[in-house]
Image (cartoon, rainbow, N blue to C red):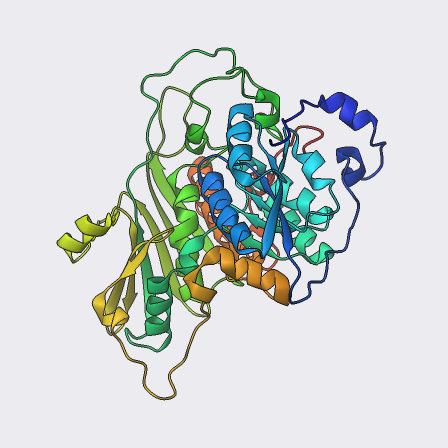
Length: 447
């Protein structure tokens, strides 16, 4: 039998930790050096958040556990029914924690997989890094510019490997599209045009109510300001609120524009101007843009990135294959070069591109690009931990992508074009917009 999760009151937990640094207040080890792995050492894994993508990650790790190269030691979730059901599948060695800080306080855990709602990503990742744990965290990396800065600093200061779950970069046909473009097959790329369907609107709002008995609502909110429970907030519907999800641009944009940054070599650059237009809902709780168009201007080299919601859809070219394989062609990007163009469909768990890139045979002397082992994003992370290397969607690249999503929303909110200094991580000549680069976080779940 698995250990049953024990409900721990956060106030009493904090009383035992003493005061001092943020890590001490949270009851976490301070600046613990990550373990160095030998060839035959097993990784000890913890999971924080096991609904949705978190359930898929857990299933993957359970399969790896059966091969003997890692062990799942702990699972944390604010939903006790989810926690209990996942513990039943993870093995008797896995223990349950309603409070993630208990899991992070375990010195035997080497790495954690975080798949909580977006508003938790930065806090969970930073707190895990401060506990000396390597991190796989779901996308988008962060909800604000300042969160992204804190994540990069924590990863570097604590020397942990961080992979963010924009898994399209590891997919085979993304690799093939990247290699094709890197070898000049469409010429110099001047525009990357992303398309996606609209975000939903809350046209039938419901009143606030008591949270379900299995949900620790206070823990689910975490760093957000406290508010009454409403069924429109969770579970997956948190994506349609600016503060917790940010709409389609921060959800799928973190996939499609991640691939664009990767293919265009823009992980360590950034746009100089951002201009957005769109429509927002007039009723209900959901306030993210329903329709949206954002234009990002890059310099040195000069190119434009466009997020269009909706944009001009390019149907997948093989209708029989689309139906057979369940290809979701409702979003993607067109890479426009001065000689030709290339379509890359979808962008997350599935990535497809045109036959000309898939069947292209590189000649002698052709450039190659990074390739994740077995085209697997999680395996890329596990390998990076053992080698002490950077994974394909490392925290710097992930924050650069998340900043695109955040800045698009900020341009829409302010109603004006923004000028951006990527090196400093600042909006230029606009104090009001600069103040929106961060937001208060609720104690003690703060950076």
